[in-house]
Length: 358
Image (cartoon, rainbow, N blue to C red; front, side, top):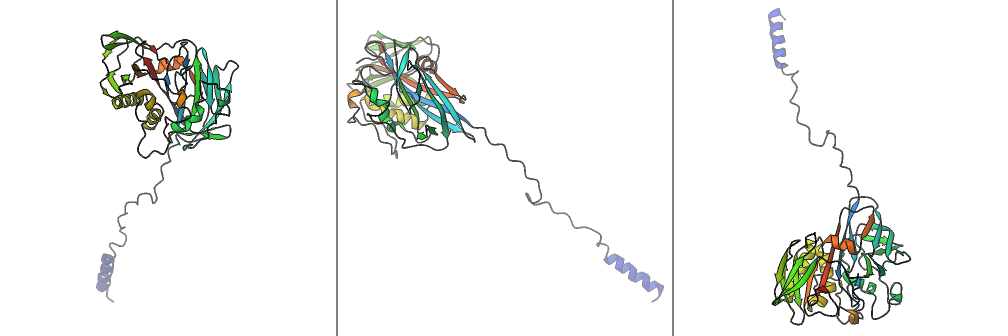
């Protein structure tokens, strides 16, 4: 082969391999194939909040009672106290709960906790707050503690607590058993210091707010014999408002009170539990029950019927500011919750301008 041919062949070979050293474009990496996974966020620390509802009334001797869904006529109850717990986050949670009755005593509570010698200080220790609900909790019979020491005409309210389960709060573990909520009822000696005063203003009533904290929602005036109500916005601290003679259907009052309970921080299920317990006694109408609920409503023909609220034909209803509830029955929690919502309804006899009496 001559030199010229050799050079030509070599040039052709070099030309043919000119792309041999060129690399193909590197494709973008498939997401997640070779990339380093970002670390998962740390679990949310466990925490909880507490919601309470109830009702406050006076007695013939100016006593006040903390009471449940059915009420004894003597002495009259002040507030229900049912405590629902809502947890958030991961990890075990155990809580100590304290209730102190200002100038009074605990009448009954469930589940059974520890009482001091004066029955003024109640403690539930090591209450486990767990995921899920404890619907269908066990409640005592009239022959068991704490009901076996309650004498007529008072009646044990712990037997009726199945009707105020909500099926949405945390499951509470105490003493080896599961509970939907905590309950206490206490008697306070001496008339309570409530924020509103009532005075006649013709056929209307003049409602004056003498407290420092706002009242959530509305004021409801109920004329039970006619099943009519009137509703006005709650006056601001230091101001007054007139509430006219009732002329609207009682359902409007029940709905307005429910909205006030929601404004105080209760969930829809907790508001409905209050209405199951109190709608009939307060408004003389049908007991509210949400569609699809399987919780049995409180029935007028129940064994507790003789201890229900004696009706007042002209009454005022409103939700107390939380600071007032704290004064009447201070609560304590260890560890502390994120928040405590207390929605205690005051039932006031408009004829007396004082807590309602039989």
